Length: 400
Ligand code: SF4
Image 1 (spheres, protein in one colour):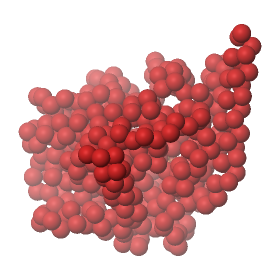
Image 2 (cartoon, protein in one colour; image 1 turned 120 degrees about the vertical axis):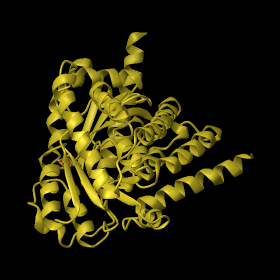
Image 3 (spheres, rainbow, N blue to C red; image 1 turned 90 degrees about the vertical axis):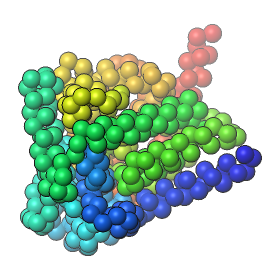
């Protein structure tokens, strides 16, 4: 295949992913349901739900990440006070404007009070539609938090049975686990490629690829990732004099696309981030086998990534952040969190003091999903990037 052919195919993959990103009416989900009578779709809010179980029931898990800058808020503001993040308003707006009508229910994982309140709001507005608040345990002892989580997952299995009329079989769950394990491997390969050769994988592209996984079946998402991973290494992009940064805090409400583009234009290669974290929540595969529901629970207990909404136990998050900085060879950290996001913003002082102690540079700013002006952020990041380059040169001179 010629370079031109592979460039064209890459553009096609990313163009398709961008069209899915822009599909705020979830027409792709409507088409998936219409293709076979009886199909169901279940929405879920960030950050993590066990998609393996949902898909095993023949139900499409649909990741909801707000309306971005594409949904005008007309009624959504009336449901929430002004001093909270934006994602619940735009999601309610999407629901009230019938954009989420193709969803047969909603799962709200226990990430923060806003999501908890959002699940209550959904129940009041749509009493006839399934809505489950998925209380993810903060105790990782198998006999305490593990037993509790198993009960939560059994409730989810009962919900799926009520929705479709049949309980997912062990065979079906195992098949689904294999598909999602493959998905995790491919996403990990994508992130590794970007970390190793960030000029080959612009973050806007890795982001759009991940977002596509929110709305298409996992088999299709795997094909998109495989295609991209085959083609991207053939690129001949010029290596830029950018710094390498780790982006932290964008795990729930997402920055607008324009902001993600701005980050890289400001002289930063993003070599790791926490966008669309559901696809990277588990740090290893689950593996098919006996009692697959329990295997899903065990993976949550033993292989969840570190996160602001998760109790750190005997693994301090600050240490894990430092490990991550070292792993991806980041020159600095960019704290990029939604305004009023308690989980992300409450962790920042701990992370910042750790980075201060370790002599690692960082900068911080906040956004809303409908932020329209990026110039200030571009200038701030450009200065951050320049100062790291300058400091590195200075430090290198002093060593000689
Ligand atoms: S953006 Fe932050 S505060 Fe808002 S719903 Fe998400 S996790 Fe909660």
